[in-house]
Length: 84
Image 1: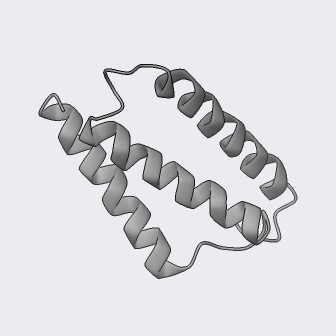
Image 2: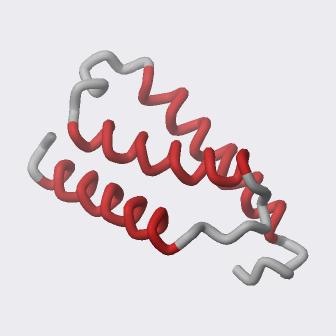
């Protein structure tokens, strides 16, 4: 989304709510805590959420951070395919 879009703040709020719900749901599952897919996805969600908390909903994610986040999501997907 363009940072000047009027819906950016609402979209970021929805994103943060969804990520908090995901973490709250899966953090309770002791069997999942050690899995690579959980670790990588948690790290990606934490990086996105932390960025918007530290800066603002209209602050774009820097290219280096975005690349790392996308790599973590990709690693989580690969781990899920492998059953990890």
